[in-house]
Image (cartoon, rainbow, N blue to C red; front, side, top):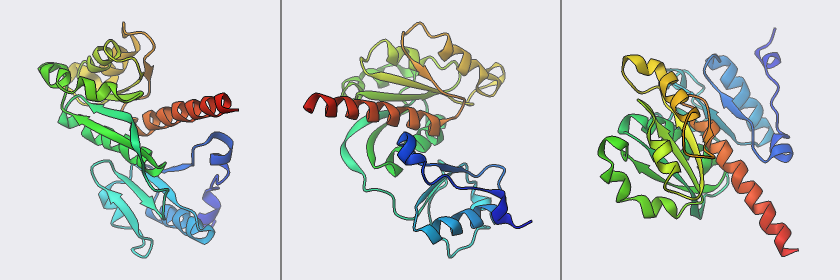
Length: 226
C-alpha cells in the first residue's frame, strides 16, 4: 500500500467551518508527513502542523521548507495569511513552563492571520504580576489562559475580565498534579462563570475556540451593518 493511501486532506474545511485542517504530527511517520506536505504543495496550499518534535522535523524532506518553532512544536508549510492587528486575543501563561502551550495558541492564531498578545509568568504565586498587566489584558475581548499546577489563574482571570475566557489546563506540576488532570478538574469546577475549557495542553484547541468566537463576532457585526 502506498503511503498516499493513508490520508485524505480536507481542503474544504475552511469553507465549512472557517478553520483549516491542521496536521497532528504525533503518531505520524516522517514518510507520512512528507507525503502530506507533497500533496499540499501540488495543490499550492499551505498547512499548519502541530506536535512536530524536533527529531521528527529533522527527518523530513529538506526541500519541503517549514517555518518551525521548536518551543510550540508547530510548523507552517507554505504562505499563510498576513497577520493583521489590532490584537483581539490575549494569551496568558501562568508560568514560564506553560509557555510552550501558550506559544502553540499564538502560532495557530498567527496562521489564521490574527494578531495576539502574550502575557507570560503572571501566575497566582506572584499575583502582583497579573495585577500590573490587568488593564492590558482587559483590552482584549478574548483571553486564553494556560495554567498547570492547581490551575487557579483561569478562575482569577475569569473573575476580573469581561471578555470570553478560554482555559487551557497544562501538564505542568508535581505528583498529584497527575499530568494535568488536577488542573483540568480545577478549571472544570471553577466558580468563575462562563469559562470555556479545552483539553490538557491543547493550545491548538484554545486558539480554534478563540477563532470561532471572533468569526461569530464578525458575522454579528456584518448583520448590524445590513
